[in-house]
Image 1: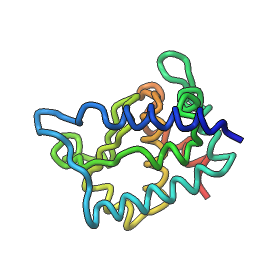
Image 2: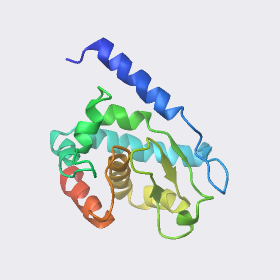
Image 3: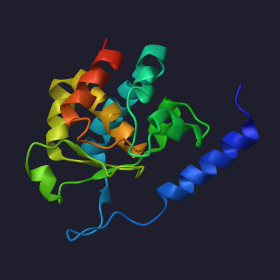
Image 4: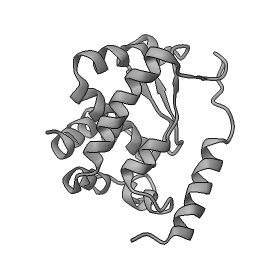
Length: 167
């Protein structure tokens, strides 16, 4: 059982981090998702959260190391919440104005920053390949917990998430 005081303190830290500087770029601040887009992202997030309740899926948080040699699981431990609870608190924002969203990207994350930017192509994936959308959400969660790319490649991360968390 988790210590309620530690969990409350960790939640406060997460809230402060999430409420930190607005996501800004040359294209302006990212906006919250609304309506249909928010509903679609919530479907994918809820499915990913269900997957993360499985001990096998949770092992993906120990499969990789960040540039400091820590696993995403070690980085998650400072929040005193489970991976599904952590994912529930990450804001998903409209990333349409970002140049990377004009290509094949579906979701964008800055390593170690607890937020995910959503590209329009992700909506199509949620509608047509819900399982893959949920895998992509877990992939991005790993980046929020410090996992970098190259190495491992984006494909390697996705394949490992699929192995651990696929049905």
